[in-house]
Image (tube, rainbow, N blue to C red):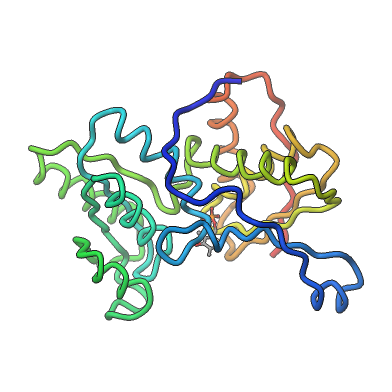
Amino acid sequence: MKEYAKLSLGLFPTPLHRLPNVSRVLGTNVWIKRDDLTGVGLGGNKVRKLEYLLAEAKAQGYELVMTTGQAQSNHAMLTAACALKVGMEPVLVLKKRGICTRRGNQVLNHLMGVDVRFVDSDSYDDIYAEMDRIAREEKHKPVYKIPCGGSNALGALGYVDCVREIAAQGQHFDHIVCPCGSGGTAAGVFLGAALYLPDAQVTAATVDSDPFDKIVAEIMRGSIELLGGGIPLPEMHFED
Ligand SMILES: *Cc1c(COP(=O)(O)O)cnc(C)c1O
């Protein structure tokens, strides 16, 4: 399989913790992969994707990193934090939805001095058009654009690595449950499990009614191609 350069942004491996109370209530052993402890900002799953995405941005000579999300997007905040860490300038073009005032992740964006722009629209087409407009305005600086959630073929490789990391931690798991918001985590976990924990069943818990079977399959196809092909598309299983 092909390997891709990644930056070292987070603190890996993250710990695996057994949850004694949840395990007692559910009558089965439940463990959590502590990707809230990735060590940048307030932590979170986007750091693994950004290690690949920002490595590509750096290698290709980009200076400005632009991404999007809701006003309180963890992905946007972590993109800004990671970009600043590696000397790149972040611009966040966010949906003017949810809490846009200086609360939550907007406090962190403010503390980091990030250039945040809001777009009053529900459509990511409008947002991506605004990103293109700003990119043209900044034409003296090449702009690397990261999609919502960092969920593309390259970003998802971060969660392929996460499953390899879980396998190396040696604990046996019958079942892995991961969140599914923009699809990159689920794509990486389905693919990573097929490669490194083929006996584990994977369920992705979806946060809304987007057509995740299509979205996640599309990301996985791209990731498989990046890895050099020849891997059958893994089965997907979603729960609301
Ligand atoms: C982004 C995010 C998710 C969902 O991950 P996706 O790769 O976007 O599907 C889950 N939990 C938290 C805390 C997140 O920030």
